[in-house]
Image (cartoon, rainbow, N blue to C red; front, top):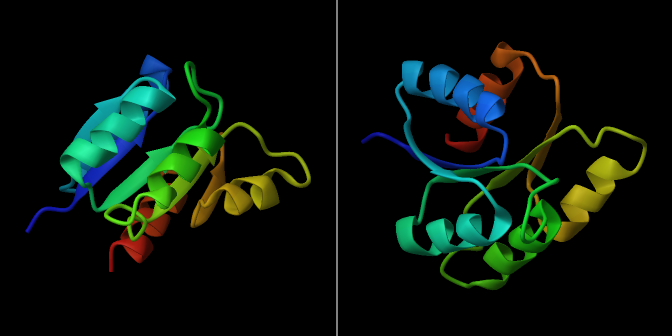
Amino acid sequence: MTKRILIIEDTEDNRRILRDLLTNAGFELIEATDGEKGVAAAIAEKPDLILMDIQLPVINGYEATRRIKADPSLRHIPIIAVTSYALSGDEIKARSAGCDGYIAKPYSPRQILAMVRDFLR
């Protein structure tokens, strides 16, 4: 069965990179362009994994993650923060919000694909 990944990312170029990488690896994608739409998509679609940008319009990735993890029907879904926030303490902040993984932009395609596959095992 094909695993479904929700990408919550406001920048089209970043979505395109992830789309190309992940569809070529055989994953089905759902996309949302802001935090609020991302939470709604998670509720509606119940993906197997979420890739969450942190700097998002409407509600940021931290708040979107908290809302998803607060929902008992969604809290089991792993969320990987994919963010340009890469300063000391940013990973701790993402994990404190409920993210299960963290990868800083720019990332290597091999690195993110390996992380996605690890979480989907």
